[in-house]
Length: 369
Image 1 (cartoon, one colour):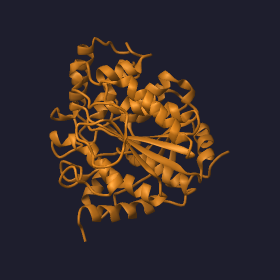
Image 2: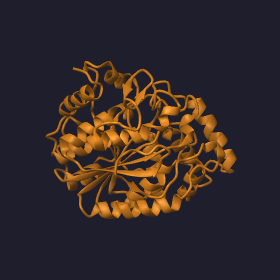
Image 3: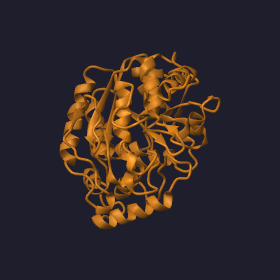
Image 4: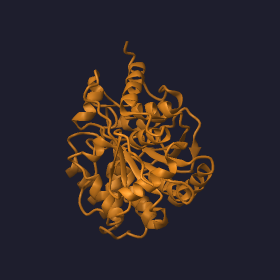
């Protein structure tokens, strides 16, 4: 069955597979999960702009989670912002979840700063600097608990959106995908238009060297790759994807960070292919400093990308306009939640509706009249 796709959505890749999956969930209920995690890699100066300072990047996942659940932040002053005052993509996620009345579950993959909310805990600890070559503990336990959680959530809903908030995660994603041989060069994105590719590549090469891993050396062992050079978000989300995709379609909400999760899941259980697609934003797909299309193609030739055609260029708020200038692009499942909201409404929710709601939320959290 082919869906009459609304202008708010576009497809890249295998359109037949995309439409086949969409036809099974069009107008049906979904559930949204966000796995939060910290990696000390984010505190290396220049690695991440997901916080006003390198130290504040450790607060970003907890603050994002509090915004999704409590609609306000209590673990820090203010809200997660980039240097320059650009707001967290959680504002778009909140808009999509509110418009579609989608249930939200936060999963603690392993954080240093805990949010003040109820959440699932999978026994993970926060990640160390990848240059140690020993980044993540309890990887197998987190994977197995994630798998069980995916199975449980699949019983009550027609599709699952998995996502992340983990500052520094594009660097760990690059490291894991190089360890697996998916990438031999740096194609991952950045929350800044000035993607610090040289720094990330340098750190990844140091990490692989410390772990004694050659490029492609762990092609069949993604969990080992995560243990050595990944972050605590990855193994949980891989487990959730595998656990849920045996029963319902899974929207992998996110950008190049979640590509590492896709790569790990496909390596461990290729049967997920045909029941998964990546849900992301136009900003990420069109990013000139990364290549989402090429990364997904290297993971598998039958994983479509469905993206939301959000446009902040006419927003009256400069902090939101900055998304059109190459800042942020993805995170906190903003693309996947938006795609899901449009699907659940059978296309009735539009990008204009999402933007109106983002403005409402933005005015509230920034105390604007």
